[in-house]
Figure 1 (cartoon, rainbow, N blue to C red):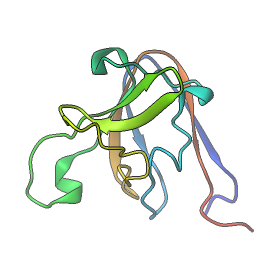
Figure 2: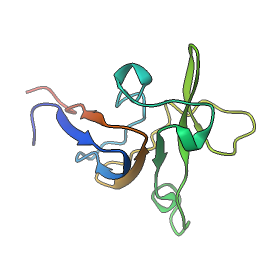
Figure 3: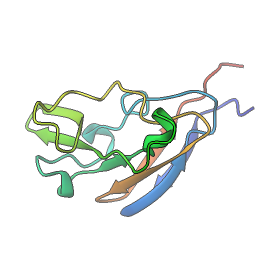
Length: 119
């Protein structure tokens, strides 16, 4: 098993990523913030998005969830598109261990997947 963090360069548009470890992670666990180069916006179509397969969380559920990095001034969090309460989903484990997840990005970014153990 890898003994160091895994870095994956991401491009604008759709990217298929995987954690590569049997561990579920959240956007916060992965450092998906504007301070780390990700794009936030009040409009979901202008912000970076995470699109997990719904069937990974609830078997036999088709389609993809759509979460985006909502940001205005100092306010920043991940939220579900269409959620009228803008619930904070930043700590929700959207990235399932050993599963693929799509990310739709506005620009280039570097995904850092932390090693789950220390040698």
